[in-house]
Amino acid sequence: MSTVRHTEIEELIESLEKAAPQSCSKPKSEMCSKCVDRVYSDKSAKIQEYLKELKTLQAEQRILPSTLETAIIALLHSK
Image 1 (cartoon, rainbow, N blue to C red):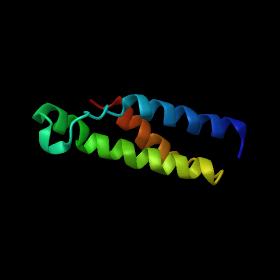
Image 2: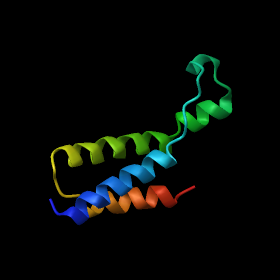
Image 3: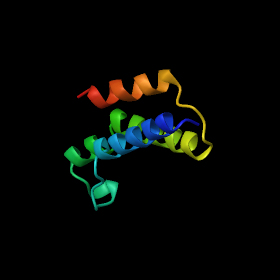
Image 4: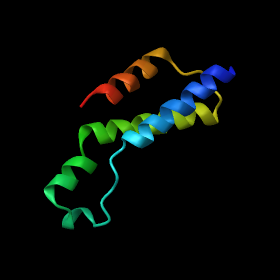
């Protein structure tokens, strides 16, 4: 894998980790509705899914598909 693509994957992982909602210290049953919405939202689930995919690509030293990159960038720019 080229250094550029490897760096790109690392940067996307870092960006997704920053965008991921911080988990509340309480169990889900004791969380307020705001925390539940933040931690268990569709966006949060997508972030976790993309992080897993990127880490797999990185571990297997595979190339980042442009469709995945585009989807991640769109997610990061969404509210």
